Length: 174
Image (cartoon, one colour):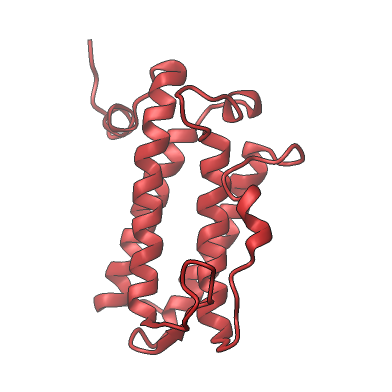
């Protein structure tokens, strides 16, 4: 099925944001992915783990429509960490699977359906938002963390996503 309109635009933006994020981690080793390059605790591997987990988690929230869901607080310590058993290659492969699942789900999704959000210590009352808003939230997360990742990558080895995008497009720099 070929999508058009709003869903096609949303999925196009997902593909674009994922691609930009993945450019930032292209060619790094697992060791580099775990390396802190700023005063922040964030690492490229931790951010990669987060964007994969974040998209998967939000899409599960949409699919489950669970009016009794609670945020899993046990994730808090590992959400922004690349685990000892994780690799950049494995996380990228998982991201590809998550992306395929998201794209398939969006094709059949009513963007106006109201999604019950999990309660959490910072949001103890049940709230609802449209599936559309939830998808836009995922996009915001990817874009925000792509910016974080770009700063970390520049600090790591001088890599620059925007310049790499230009090189990928065939531009040459002297």
